[in-house]
Image 1 (cartoon, one colour):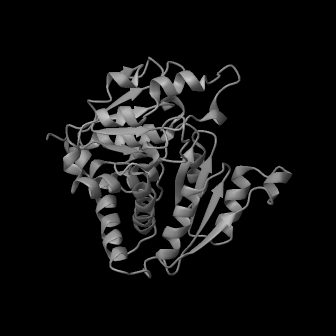
Image 2 (image 1 turned 135 degrees about the vertical axis):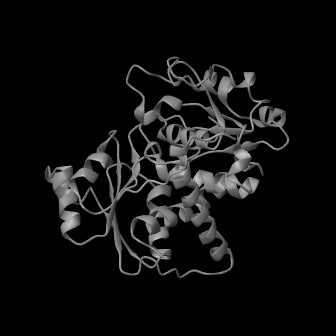
Length: 314
């Protein structure tokens, strides 16, 4: 495997904003540390001390279950305090700006802010305003970097090493155009030599993409090593965009019959929440090759690794 020297040099930053700002070495270090936490957790350890003097606050302008609870769980396992900022009951409802809210949180003495927003670039802008670390928990259709680190941890666990990803073919199936997960994960996978392809209808997978694109899942389902199924993000569809569910499931759903055609060692991934009956059928949603539960579990260890790195954990 050939890698350029710059990709092997670790970068330093007070923030965690995008996979595109990281190097292969950065990702490998984060995954290695996450796997250490995972091993210690499996051995029964539940009290880690790295963040004992720190407090983290979530600033979420978009609903979330897995990401917010994962950051909360990670912070508390590391011995830190976690606060959930409730947008609905805050001064945001009175018109307070994102900048004013973020500055207030810094003034209150929080060690870091985890930002999730429906618009691209907001966490990056918040990071420019604050001196404390800012973590991107998803910004519009741009990136979801902590999800990508967690997925790498899951794949390292599955295959024994990230080196095993070299030469693999990964199909991101469904609503790629609106998926920050597809953007972050495909970029992370490329650093370890995997090739991504996008599969979906034209309105969800723009033809202008530099990644090889397919319009039917049946064209590639027997060739891929990883089928990464994506939720149709109806909340991001424009008014003119409608979803023909019957046609979509017929062409792009990973059902029992298609799963049976996959390679023997192939795996299925899904970032959640899962729409059973749309992107996967009920059989696949319970398949042993579905790594979704492991993705949730390892997302905690990944976020422990990220928080520890930013806040100076030993």
